[in-house]
Length: 596
Image (cartoon, rainbow, N blue to C red; front, side, top):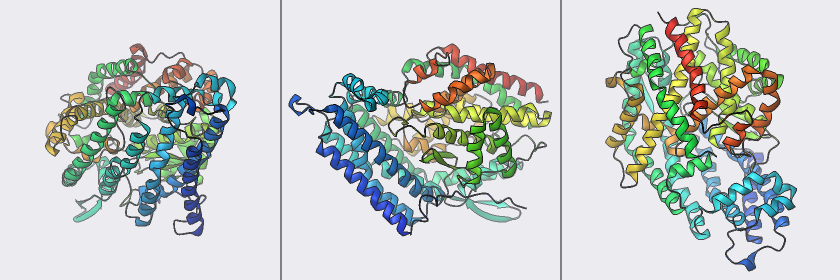
């Protein structure tokens, strides 16, 4: 019997898009944005060039503005999440698309409010405000970073224009990408008949033990992506062009410097981590050769990367995954287990792959520390790790429940902290009691993920670096993007993957390229930082528990280096990253010895 997979439930927010309750909530949301704009206008919240425009009581104004901004944006985030949940699971939902478009028309005003607040704070004596106000002191990190960021703002008129044009610029191109790719379908010959299926379902065929079916699905996916290449190349060129223009206008040396600031790390940290990652390439290539040896192949094809190495004694149905995650989370703390129990029981998770649904997996904040998780589940240990990872994000959100919107604005580097930790808890638990055949499967699954992060994210970083370099001169053609994607994807894997089978059109379907810049290296940071924290947990579990939830709660309130120092970690030192990679090297050694 096919297991019925859950769809998420957001009825606790509104009964439906076509209900009076939603109509009232939507109208209230638009009114909240207008009220915030009016409040900012009333107090002239923007860059102050004339000393006579300084507010008489800056402390009182700041407290009023910060309180209203935190409350109002929280309300809008919940409304946006509710609408987006329908589109993420059904891009053909025209009613949701219309509402999202309508509210995004107002997002330029909301986005500009954050910019105006930053510019205003950059004109004030922030330290005096922190000394005079409890609210300011509670937001000290945010205020101090705002002063730094204010140095990279254009004039108020230019920032307002940029926010307005963003609606018909990168946001529109990103929306086109999401809508278009979510509706791609492929036709695969299965069981003697042609079956049309969404791209996400075809991607799940990469887990099939039938190599011919995997190859067929891979070829069909590549063909579908090739058909989507022209509009998506236009989208990518437009988005990266806008990023280059704005980063230059705002005085950043490069988009990377802007992203590093947003992620609360510096180049020294990034270089230390990337240097350690590149030195680990030969170790991961050793893992890929062992995988080929297990599959009795002279060399892996691209479509051999995900196929499970046997079924093992554990099938990992959705029900089994649910039970196992709750049990293993409880070994860390009842609070973590209760979070998982609520997520499974209260409709937080949408697990079924289906037409029009986005691929991959993610977790998004809903309200009051509650989350919603999207996955495309298939019965495998890989899906167990994915759900544990996304539930880790939900646990992080739980720990941010009492923080304001300004305090919980996380850098991506630290946003992966809890997800990586929770995934490791589950993986190690499964490994401890597994028989040899299952050990191979489990080690392969966690190493495949690590390879995607260490090898894949590094290649993504190199791809975007080259794209930005060339895009600064001109648009890139489809062929150039394909060549860059192929070159940067092949470099880390060396001679372990047959180049004739490697996809050239992967860039067409990577949402991170279209929604942000350099989204990749935070995953490497998150994995290796999480491994470093997990090592501290294994050394002294009780002491670790005392500080870990507080660390998660403070991840939007400090530089990554300062927060890491709480656990004796120096992220600017290559030795730390090498130590985390040594954990993975030990897993590779173990896998290599187990594989016949």
